[in-house]
Image (cartoon, rainbow, N blue to C red; front, side, top):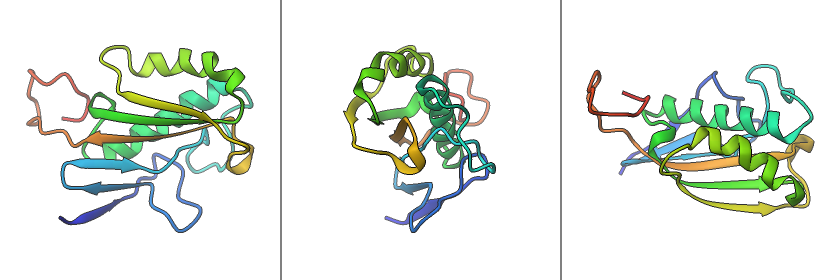
Length: 141
């Protein structure tokens, strides 16, 4: 299988020796995404809700650059700086996965890069819908 490196300016640029995402066969693996505004290198806000929303938008941008979308996500890992913020993160998370949510793990960590409140990574299947296929409910075709 060929490994394809995914990069998009719609998500924060990698700041180290890693890729925003990797496509391998029929799957896309995203790097952990913080709630950073693409191109600005700053957090969208200090609260976990705003950072969760932006982190998921960044995950979405990487997936779309790889030919997938949130509807094709099969596994998510959420890293929280403070597990007491789980319910606040979860409320925003539910907006992005309203039906048939993927498998998920959520763990508390001692610290996140740049002082973030939340970091999110995902694994998704590549969309196999034909462009304009009305039977496909995903956003990536």
